[in-house]
Length: 178
Image (cartoon, rainbow, N blue to C red; front, side, top):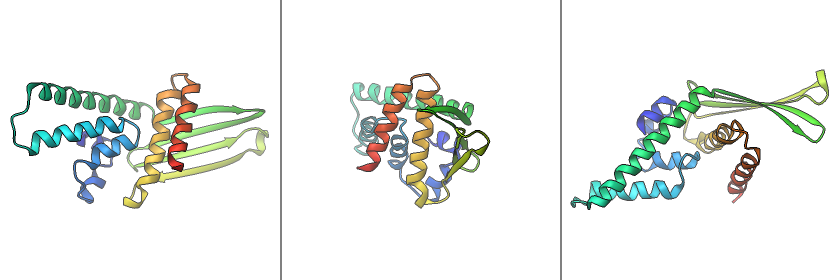
C-alpha cells in the first residue's frame, strides 16, 4: 500500500499526520478501490495475526495471503490505469446540448481538475472549472470525491458501459447526501 500511496504522491499525508495502518486501507475503500467489507476483513485478519501472538490456522494464513495478494494486484492495476489515463476527455450530449468534459489527474501536485465546456452555442461557449487538491487534512473529503469520480470514469466510461457508469455515479451522489 505504501508503494501505491508513494506513486500517487499522497504517502506524505499519511506520514505527516502519523496515521495508523487502518487509515490506509480505509482511504482505498473510500476512493472506491475495494468494498469496505474487504478492508474490514483485511484489518481483522491482520490484527489477529500480528497482535494475538497465537499460531494461526493454516486456512487463515492461506486466506490472508490470498487477500493481500489480491489487494497488491488490484493496486498495481489501478496504478497503471492512473498513469495511462492522466487526462480523460468526454463529449456529452444532453438533449440538444453538447458539452465537452475534461478530467485531469496531476499526480505531482496531488490534484484533480475538472473542466466542462458548453459547446451548444458554438463560439459563445461557456466554461466552468473545478480544481481539487490534497494539501492538508481538511482537503481529504473533497479529494476522495474527486478521486471516486475519476476512477469511475476510467472504469466504466472508457469501456463503453454508459448505463453502468451512470448508475455508479448516481449511487456515489446518493451516498454523499446521507
